[in-house]
Image 1 (spheres, rainbow, N blue to C red):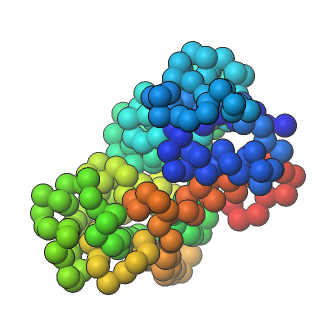
Image 2: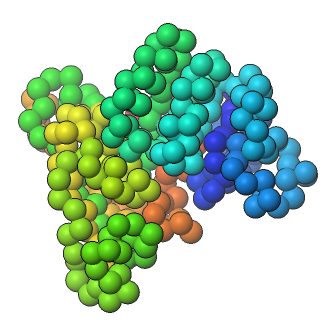
Length: 267
């Protein structure tokens, strides 16, 4: 039985926890959840797992795997500690690796402690194909992200346009993945994951649109290289938090299944 902890108990964290408790994540036991504010957690005394804001209590649970669902700052705060505690880490806030120092440090600590940093496909598809293609020369990887206006409230895009009044697609960013991951920490972790699978954060080209003509979160990926060419369009149903989609939690659950089953498909 795989012993699991979750950092963060927002939309994704609660969905993953529920799936584990319902037996949907394979041979997995949820031992603890680390949160910032205990007062926001209702009925925590009745929980079948520990809910704590004490990092030492959380990391004392002899966890096999820790799932980070709480954002860039949480990964900066607890990524190294997770690996040093003897746990593998499933990383959802991949955009935090726009900080190359954090990325290199966590890689070093993971190697030192014989631990793994695991990045699920999350909101996009085709990471297996991109990662395989990167074994040979890869010429270009691009991703275009389109989300409805409600997904961009609370971001710097509010300084560019009136999100209540936008009536046609608006290109809010065009550049490389390192910059998009830094500027939009909740919305485009997908570009960072794609970059690490392929040609890197400084070579992966990114366009970001506020698009009132779509109701789903849309990602369009194109890649060319020795392997050939791949073109993908993904439309994700937004979760109650419109910055993300249900598929992110589902991808995390599938990753747990991979870690706890003798049959692994699609890596």
